[in-house]
Image 1 (tube, rainbow, N blue to C red):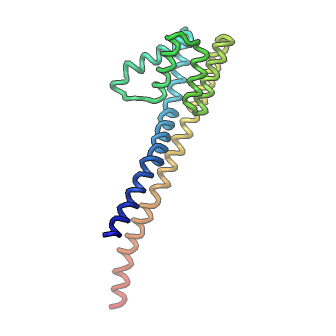
Image 2 (image 1 turned 120 degrees about the vertical axis):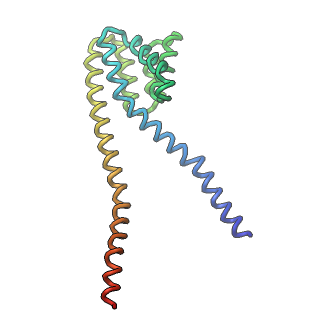
Image 3 (image 1 turned 180 degrees about the vertical axis):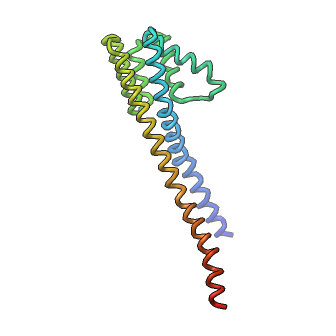
Length: 185
């Protein structure tokens, strides 16, 4: 009875460890992957809207409005939720430059920090050259996304090696066992 209780305590301890430590880490990684997947789209849409003649704050508010309209169908996207927070800050009177800088720092990922700083600087210095910088950032973001997809494909192929070797072992046993049995007879 005491042995069963000790085993149960160990299992409960491992479960609590996973719930308190590993699960939040996994959720954070999932959130970061989702945000990085959305980054090229956000940059491309900002580029298109600013080149179409909207000011940066107007383009930002337009993106957040589009997201909030589509959210019931597409689901919650963390990067767009943070953009919506920034949009509310802008509508409530916070200077757009400050709001963009806080956006990047709040997310904490290098690409978003860079975007926030880029937008903050352009709000201070003026929008001259913003289109070119956004296009360059968009190109770089799509290249990074392509590399991420390639790395994910390589990880999947590596994970598939273990089951493949296991199947190879089973096939070898199926072939070798009958051969060895026929030799011993």
